[in-house]
Amino acid sequence: MFQRILIANRGEIALRIIRACKEMGIESVAVYSEADRGAPYLQLADQSICIGPAIATESYLKIPRLISAAEAADVQAIHPGYGFLSENAHFAEVCRDCKIEFIGPPPEAMHRLGNKNEARKLAQKAGVPVVPGSEGLIEKDEEALALAREMGFPVLIKAAAGGGGRGMRVIREEAALLSGLRAARQEAESAFKDGSVYLEKYIEQPRHVEVQLLGDRLGNVIHLWERDCSLQRRHQKLVEESPAPNLPDSVRKKICESAVRLAKAAGYYSAGTCEFLVDKQNRFYFIEVNARIQVEHPVTELVTGVDLVKAQIRVAAGEPLPFAQRDIVHRGCAIECRINAEDPASHFRPSPGLITRWQPPGGPGVRLDTHAVAGYRVPPNYDSLVAKLLVYQPTRADAIACMRRALDEFIIEGIHTTIPLHREIMRHPAFQAGQVDTTFIERTWQKKG
Image (cartoon, rainbow, N blue to C red; front, side, top):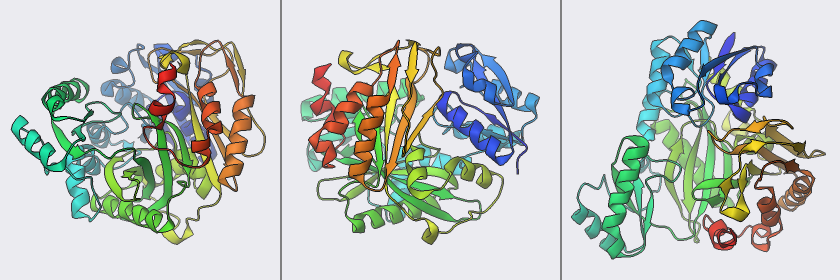
């Protein structure tokens, strides 16, 4: 087992990893930018190292500085968390070259799955359903026009190297296709240095269901059941839960088995998530693999009892999975609300600044993953997530009631947050009935801002 791990991230996920290390008897080394200097969670690490200015490209995304910090601290491994460099295959390769274990999947699997078009081909070979679309990248406008006419509108333009909704365009009529292609290519080139795109049939009002995977270096891969992440705004998740409501058990079984087949085909190990769209007829289609720990991983931890961060660390150290598929039992219901420093009443405008009051919820069934406290200043430089509020109860109705109570207890002053929106969501009849999809937030709340 490792003696010392560097955490190449910040905020709540850095604190989450620090805590896992402490429980495992492993020293933790936190890194921070000038924007995060003095953040309270840094005091809980065994060591902390400044790696640069506030701008992420000169700190959390600067590979040479991270490697220098790792070598100076004499660590055996680096945990990338989520975001930043967590899915960067080059970073994983650099770690390998420097004889530092990367706590995540192998770079070969990241290459196979990082490009969405290549991942789509691999899924087809593994017998995993994919959304109807182009067989490869769209090189010519005439090719896109012909395929779109054949599939029928609406269609979806997707960046091959995309993520987070960037380089993605929904095209509802032929007249908008060519301009949409140009815009998607430009955005993809700017965001990922790769302007290649492909075309898919757009699934109207689908659900977003993802399967949590865990594999070891010996080729063992298991699933830890699914999460429903349909409540989104601009492809950014707001609420996640497990089990997925109103999903037939036969579909649940097939979708989880499909995810495992794909992971094995890719030679995948560590934690990861296979994401699917589910249409109104409960047909499911593979869309992508997130080759990292997810923001919403605590949802799965609550319903399975498996600590995914500790499992990642053990797999990276070469240990086999200590359990088989039959040992993973799903119990109860867990719901997570992402609390962001944004103002839903003003088109979700970012709201960085000083937290003047922080009154967290508690009580039975409540878990709060956060790095924030009263007096903490939320910087404007990074993702706006300040807390993940989770509840766990025997039934979904109980979980919703518990979440409503916890949200009512949660008081944050000095900045705007998404707590008021979550309070409304938990009381909405459609959510309570489990009848939501990926367009629900835009259709129901977007016009209020």
